[in-house]
Image 1 (tube, one colour):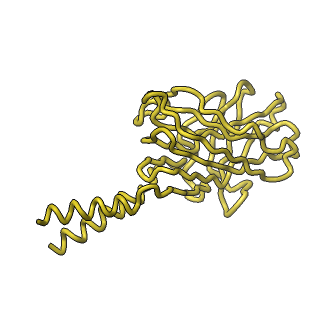
Image 2: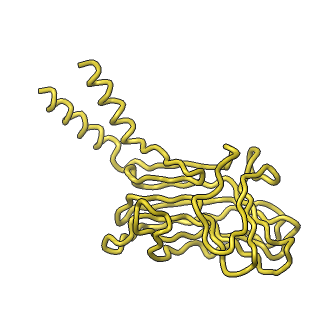
Image 3: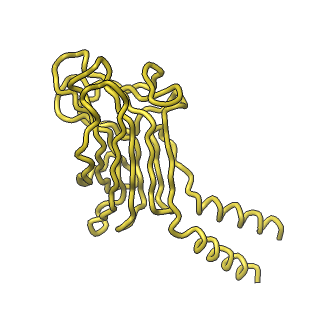
Length: 217
């Protein structure tokens, strides 16, 4: 009887939370987090209070040397299935009234849920760049629909891509702040830039309620 009640409660809670979105933001306010990983000529990354879009901290990244398209990994979502959607954004800024440096949001698929460097293929992104005038923070955003490619792709990494466009060393520096993500799946696992895994709402609710029920019994 007890097992039947627990099973019934589990099915009810799963039905109740099915389809629930997960939405989170991160702004480097912990003073510690930087990125989950990088690709290309990223000379350094730093959690800084030098220039911020909101609150007191942001991410500072330096391209060195100038070459290719350096990438900063700011979110990683695993456990996705075909048709799941991932929408993300961040604010980018280039100092010094920079007429060269700018950023845009992009993504790529990973094949191994335990390895963020398990690159599978590009997931594309937004062709819109932040302003290359460098006078203010600008937001870039994009939405992806998950394609597992028959099971080859498991996760998606959200990238902040840096474009410096000049060999002048004063234009190597980029700032990123206030990044957000919304995932349509309530069972996907979301890794944020500080390296922590964001809790899964349905799983937490289920565990808490089942724990309360069992304790009372």
